[in-house]
Amino acid sequence: MKIISMIPARYSASRFPAKLMQDLAGKTVILRTYEATVATNLFDDVYVVTDSDIIFNEIVSNGGKAIMSKKEHESGSDRIAEAVEGLDVDIVVNVQGDEPFTEHESLAKVLEVFKDDSKKEIDLASLMVEIHDWDEISNPNTVKVIVDQNNFALYFSRSPIPFPRDKEAGARYFKHKGIYAFRKQALIDFYKLPMQFIEASEKIECIRYLEYGKRIKMVETTVEGVEIDTPEDLERAKRLWK
Image (cartoon, rainbow, N blue to C red; front, side, top):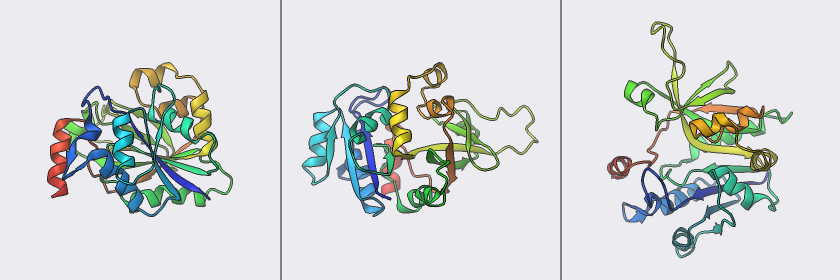
């Protein structure tokens, strides 16, 4: 299989504007993420896909590969679907631009599910990590996922799922990590399908796949790292980097 990684990167961000160009131990967040993705040695190619000249120049001037988006997009998946449509590739891995702690082990686990999927029943795969702190479980910035017995996603939400009506039921809570691996056709399908009201309400792009009957295989990992959504996340990332 030919496998590439695409890193969608918007300069504007409602919660933390210009977060991808913030300094993280001497390099920008987006450059750290790009270099970490390349360093996994799992991909035939790695590209940053952006609508920003600033981010494009940051990657290219440091020897990386970048693609300028031609259109405005609702989601990162839409952005990379446009970029990948004409490429000869089997699997496309979407690594979020604010994931500077991207590492080999978790990505390798995600890619492994496609090697075992001879019937091509899996449209895309993603990562989840168990969380225990109720503040994080109830935080709307933390996207949660629930799965069936075969670890296929049932639903994603910013609310606590499942709702703990019976706190003795032993429910486990999982945080969705923003890394996706797509079959190319599933990604192209996503690009052509209109957003429905559930995705629009939650602002979680992978809900679109569930609404249209696609199958998302979730892979559990214990590696959490730090996703940089807020200035406080950036400070945590700086401490962790040290």
